[in-house]
Length: 349
Image 1 (cartoon, rainbow, N blue to C red):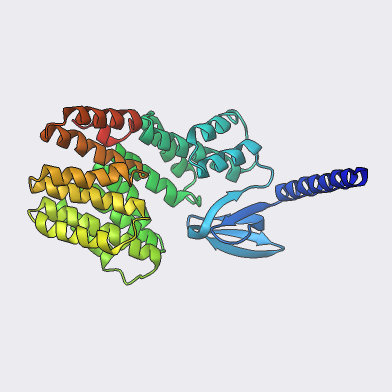
Image 2: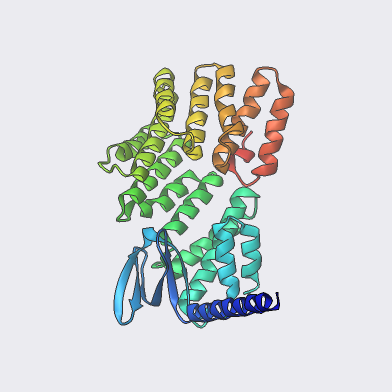
């Protein structure tokens, strides 16, 4: 027993020593974490919005930004890495708590300072769109980041956040402007995602013909990857809403039902948007009960996307009253305001 205990102690000591050694080793390098495979270590020699170049034993290797999940920097403060981890887990309040510990911290390296600024702005934006924080302050923080670091690998994510925040503020034209640079990215799936986002902003502005053109640009793409096909499905949802809003709701219902039948409900965001669109079609057709049933799919089954769930709750709060279910209308409105105070849907009457 004593020998076994001694072996356990020695093994634990060895593992601790290895962990300490690896931790120290990691602090000696910049690390790029990709969506697949082990992280690559070296020294970042060039930062760009499209590629990040890592010097690895004297050889520069470019990494495309669309494959990068995160980057850690040599000798960065531990609070920054803790904040990144919390952001990846969508724990934005905890991430912001970590970052605020760095207030007054003077980073010796510009890339570290930029990362601190970006993640602070990101957390402010996310919280403003969910819990109802200061949208103006969040917008200012992210714009300041983009102006100070226009070649950061966070550029496209920052542009999308700015567009999303403008949407949550009801500033549709600003959203179109902020999403615009993403459509110029070199990756087709980024371009498709941007066109879909711009199309949704134009829909909100009731510019249905312009929105249709953006959605058609997505569906006309020759790309056939899994992500490209997903973006085409989102575009078809947008096209259906345009049809409904321009007097062709029956045609839109048929298209949406076909899309729902042919796709996997595991894609909860797609199905939430599809059922929301179906609900809007039935509203246009003056079929409140059918609209309620469609929107309940989002409320009960596909509620993980905050914006889509908020939209469903908004329409349900109206429809329940139309079918003499005032208690459920009040409940839907209460959930909307409590859970999604930062959403544009919570501000609409």
